[in-house]
Length: 89
Image 1 (spheres, rainbow, N blue to C red):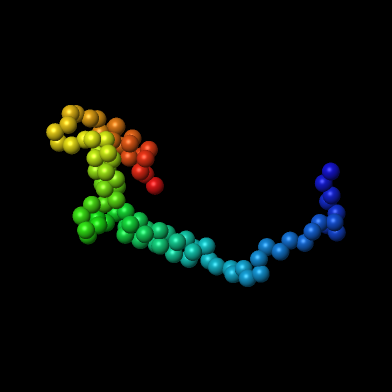
Image 2 (spheres, helix red, strand yellow):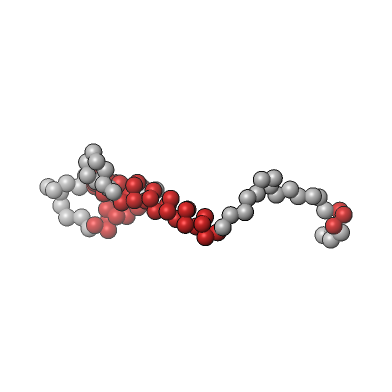
């Protein structure tokens, strides 16, 4: 049975240094940080080879599957499934 008497309940300390911040400012800052990380890490091609990370994963999966210009036809869905199943973060 639950004891509803406040005297019998343990005192809970949530945090000592809680700062109040504007939710609007925090959302703007967090969104901007996330957007910049996506642009830098995923959307821009790498200087070394000109490929985006997803393109590099696709080419690696195709190499692992033995696909090359001289091999037979393979549906792209098979490659996509391979990439999503093994290499997608």
